[in-house]
Image (cartoon, rainbow, N blue to C red; front, side):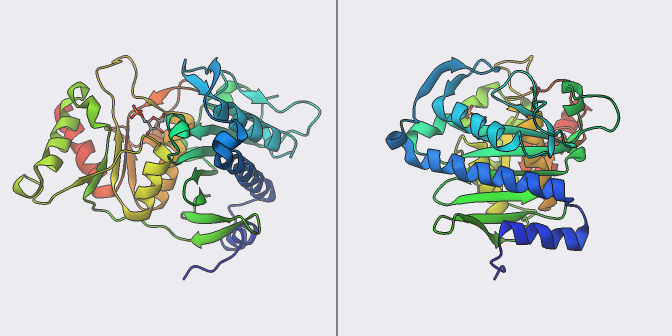
Length: 337
Ligand code: P6P
């Protein structure tokens, strides 16, 4: 049974054990967690809070923004700009970086987030979530620029998400394993409910949007065809399929019971590497997955080893149970050779 301690106690004990959580980083994580609590309250209100539906605007990706996308973005900006831990923030909902205003002290960290991932599920009451990634601002130089954010995922100081589902659960890593905290609404506090999360290396469950099948590259088609062939096919076992269309919810299932999640490159928009964003979706999720013993590649190489060229760049994603991710990656490498 996991010791039921608060997020604060967990972070302080982890700092004593591993020394990875300087006070500025601990403050930053606690402020992000508090912002997720506030977002959860808005999400849970739904129609009662007049937060459903679209905001009548588009984000930098050209996607229609939901009211909750904008609310969640504003909550994260307002909660984090004054604390002194950050130099700047970047969000899926904002074209450029948000530099901490001069009226507040500048810190040494950079915060990136997808404030509300899975927006298409908001109006149909399916789990959605907030994804965040923490980088250190490079030493030297004056001020902060977009270029300071363009660091490989291996440079992350922390990463996590909050899933707004039947429970509101915060999942976090600072590089010493993965911990899960469930929101105790009566106390308004995050309580440790799982520590040292481990993903099984094998699985019988895959997550992909099957409606895109005709657009996939051959290695993806080969892998999924083999899964669908089940016991009588080359895998010799039956597979189950899940697709929630909310990365946070699909990743949470994989961290909880294993599985492989794929959003691969496809021919619909061949100039794009994939649909998901590297900096504030794939990198933080990859950090969590690798810290839990899983693997995460773009079909060819580790996602966290990729050098970003643009803040909002997209990437193909294959992540989850290590042996399955290795198999899909090998199929891609075989196709290239
Ligand atoms: P599709 C949500 O919009 C998202 O960015 C991820 O959370 C999710 O995994 C994916 O897109 C769903 O995409 O094409 O199946 O709607």
